[in-house]
Amino acid sequence: MLLFLSFLISAIISNPCVPDGRQLARQSEEEFFDYACRIKLLELNKEESEASVRFIKDPAEPLTPYLETLHGLLKEQLTLRMGHAAKEVSRDFLDQKVHRLMKIFLKDKLGLQKPVTPEYDLANRAKWDPHFHGSSLFADHFPKARLYLPNYEEAYAYIKFEHRRLEDRSIFIKKAMEEESFAKVTEVCSSYDKWHIVHAGKRMIPILGHKKVSGAVDRHDVWGYDVCGLEEEDRYPSQKAFFESVQGSKVVRMHMGETIVPAKGREHVRLLLDEAERYYTSSKPLRIGHGTHISIEDMIRVAKKGYYIEACLSSNKRTGILDKRSDYPLGVMLVLGVNVVIGTDGGRLYSTTLPEEYAHAVRNLQKFHAKLKNSDAWVLLPNGDCLCYKHILPLLREENKKRGAERLEEGVTYKQLGAVLDPSVLERISSETLIQNANVLLEACYPSHSR
Ligand SMILES: [Zn+2]
Image (tube, rainbow, N blue to C red; front, top):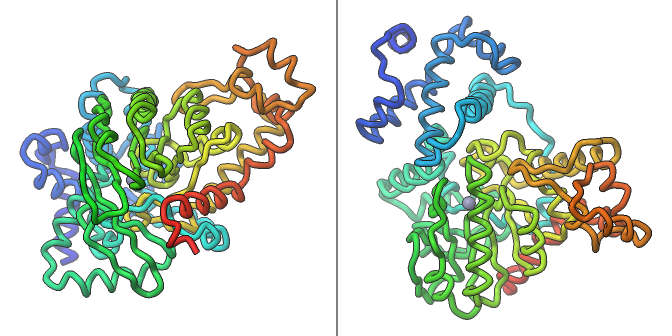
């Protein structure tokens, strides 16, 4: 076995005939995945391991054959994920994204990821993981799914395929649930919409994974709909027919703003809100999955409407949506009164848990508070939006309002923001607000499950 592995390593690394990802992608998805697995599972020799550590510290280091191959593979995966939008991005933009993903991958591979101290108390008090995809329960059973990342849709498709091949499905489901202990209430969606299982004290709520790009739904046997897999990088598909078909008190989550190219996600959320304003009539608050690249203007719109945004920090990092978890604009959202909640997006797939996600959220907010004290940088989002006085006028201390009104179009620095905000606004930039939001959302969506 060892002999075979070392042969494989040297064959892949030294053989100039090894096809690059692009060639394979043209052949078939299966072959491409086989290739990706081979590259990602390769055991590194001492030299390659040391080079990987150097690369993690400084991506400007010259690439070894393995790193070169990995670079090509991840670049191809990202390009596939972006579709047509890949043609619009600069080489530097793409390279930087690839370097980030290489670092994450290599840290995992070499066991260098620094663990966070999970915030169990916060996760327990939140009572549930509001953004969770049922299929991810099985990522531990089919760990190869993680090798598909950053292409999460393919990862989910792989899990579903493998899961369907199992003979005794119900025993397997129960076993997986026994092992899960992150949330008391779990929404399960995608193809497992028939799930309605109360097991080991966990309450499972089936919602329908809805993937049709546009069109009506009409189901009486589910609590609601999780609309995912429709946001291509470069295109917003109209949701008019879907919104119009949602009746009464169905729960609705739309995945939007989860794009590699920030400007695209920003635009998609705007279009979604335009349509929701006209056609969404469910009595439940609309839930926006990720919303990562939402504009500041639209944050204000979401806050006014009482909609919810479900932030999944580790998922965004592992799929190349954000460079760092702390880039997610949690602080700005809380300042503007957006109902933002923390989810895992299917923790097992992204090697995270709800308590760990709360730990990352706490860190994100600590960094934000530190900047409010001592940073002279503009309050800028990854999508390029700058927070201005016009956005925060109603949130200023009384004595700052007149001055703010004279500078409406001017940008605000973090330090200025910290100095002019009303104390009650500063106070809500905290994990307590995140927990409160999660509790209120649970009660609003599933009153019978929230106690
Ligand atoms: Zn999701």
